[in-house]
Image 1: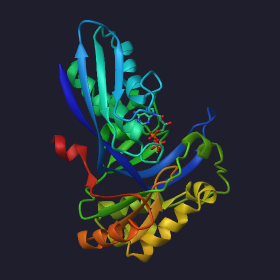
Image 2: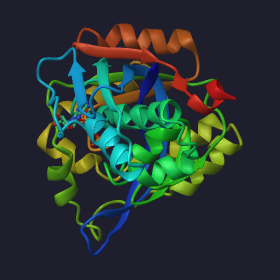
Image 3: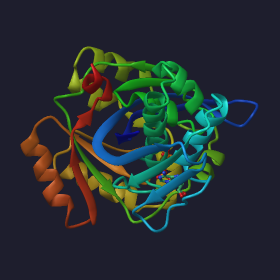
Image 4: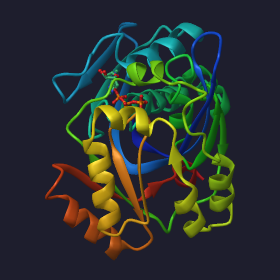
Length: 290
Ligand code: ATP
């Protein structure tokens, strides 16, 4: 049995870290969206062995238990006492260590895919709870739709459509280690953003308000080390983005436009400054499966 799952990248439209839990994990309040820049994850089950194999087209990603896709298969196999093995082949298109949740997207895709192939009948919420054991972004990636994300990443509230928006996504050369940024958060020092305002703006389809109240509490931490982030942000705004912001722990920066022509102009202008630039739409996996 086999299945091909789309594993979309994510962007953080708003990100606030409220406090640190006793176990060290941050309490998050974020608005995230999936975008139409995705890995493709082919999942094939086999009766002949219970081995989990991961293959990628990159040459540098781990193919063993360090791969989040492997961990997703392992956690389902152990929890539901499955004797079958699985071969996971990842066509990697999402930039790695970029703040776009590529590893989590692959894990979310494996959870959804194996839920079907192994007839586990788990709800998205149950898959999201399992996903949190792998990484804080996996619960969101199980849903892959515009959503408010709270707790350690496990409380997902789907929001309305972002359809009129266009995103220009630029990945600076630097690769950022998420744990190293999370360790540096000083909760009393960072700027706390009003994430609820962003939620309300999306619910009202009020894109002008959305773009004025976005923010990422982690951006100053990463941008201090990688000034390229601020330079790209400034260029995006200069070329006409209505808002520009770092995603997650960075270094990826995205700009927002409400028309395709404006987005295309920003995209064309930025390509002279940054090698990796993408012009993408928001993506909603929930809308695809309904
Ligand atoms: P996040 O914003 O969720 O922290 P990221 O986009 O910054 O994630 P990823 O691309 O998910 O970062 O990769 C981070 C690390 O995870 C890399 O060091 C990579 O080796 C490891 N990793 C494990 N599995 C995968 C996978 N399937 N795809 C990408 N990276 C993976």
